[in-house]
Image 1 (cartoon, rainbow, N blue to C red):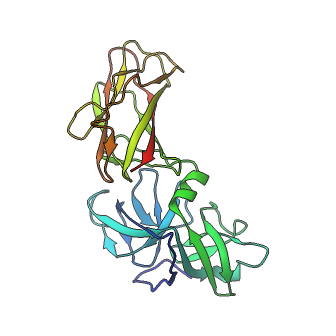
Image 2: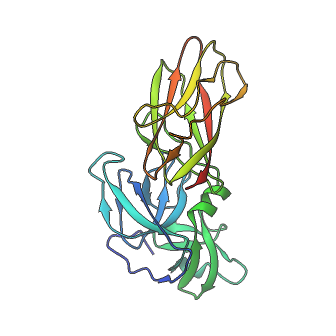
Length: 266
């Protein structure tokens, strides 16, 4: 098999676990019925046997953003689904019931794949087909969260199954960094992990309108972990696709840190 060039009639088994989601697209063409993945910046693209991708579901439409910039267009996909995919070279057998990406319509085994991009558990197979259960929340929890590129504004934040988002902030002058929240949530805790020395530097969570969610959290002492002192109930609930802003203040030294946001679903 080869990567898709036209829509694929990918059969899905009817299940109550189906969840329909939308994300912004990388500089790529997403083809209906193909295996959907996200890259390190959180943008959708067709799955391939490449490093630093996470499989999230099956595309529900064809969207061509190959001539644009990352984030210009959005595409819908279904996750929490059991999909019939191609069993590349019949690699999936009784002793190998975990599926890994061969291309955006085919799966293989970890022994064959180069980068071991996990798709899901195999429930049924023949020499040519494999039914695979794909769940974004399971895959993002199993795999390390892709690092968000904070220089892309707004960047799409990655949220694992526990509702955690890890937002890396670079060393730069005072600036705002905007992130798109992938699912409706309520922020219940924020911690800052400092990764270089500074003096008087702070991180503050705000909504897209610039209204404070948290207090200004210290981000100065190298290796220090600092927790938000306050969270405002009036602003800490965010809809899917809403903007979460991290206002980074550089008083002296470096602002390099990770802002770790813990949420619960809403």
